[in-house]
Figure 1 (cartoon, helix red, strand yellow):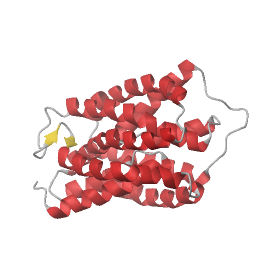
Figure 2 (tube, helix red, strand yellow; figure 1 turned 90 degrees about the vertical axis):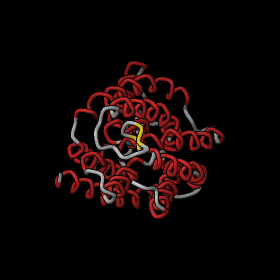
Figure 3 (cartoon, one colour; figure 1 turned 60 degrees about the vertical axis):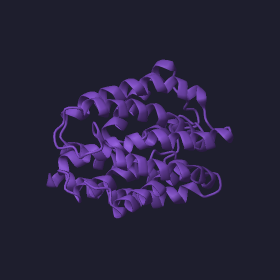
Figure 4 (spheres, one colour; figure 1 turned 30 degrees about the vertical axis):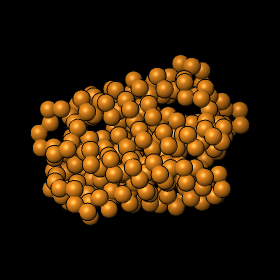
Length: 271
């Protein structure tokens, strides 16, 4: 699969959009990347089942770079709750390892596409509802946060997302301020992405039919182009997050997610 100019342009545009959203909403961009990378790969002859898996793995790998750029900008504003990061990260790494090296390798791409569609649809609904937590609710203890981290890492590994759609609602549900939750989610994106990316590389070593320039399930050309552009845009997203009406933006983004979830649902059912 040659890296023609049109493919580079498509991937660069995707990187710009996902980088900005990573900084704006504290997401790794996987919810946007996976459907589009799936579409790009299947359009260039990759088997649909394999394309879904490669899209999830490549999306997750790009989050390693996006999260670093995003969290630096958030940290400068003093918004990252590093105490929460320290408690959630160990569980995240464990959950990610189980997902990326175990369940992900066993499940067919069609089932992963269906799970992705349902997960994104649920996340979009949560965004629209924007339900507020009870004033008395607080974060659980160390064991509780370890368990929560495991769930976040596991779900992220199955759908190729940075965990923001689980960690941000979880933290706001526990009355962590929304800007702190978004910033902390960006910081959590790094251990989530790193642990899962290693798992995808290991799990994809013996897979047949992978295109040239693949490292396990990760398609390296897409990783390089998307990561390069998304890193440039993430700080702009952070700046916008502190200046724009995030509630309104979430509603618009939720509508986009419903469309992307529908596409992945169709891919899963067609498979």
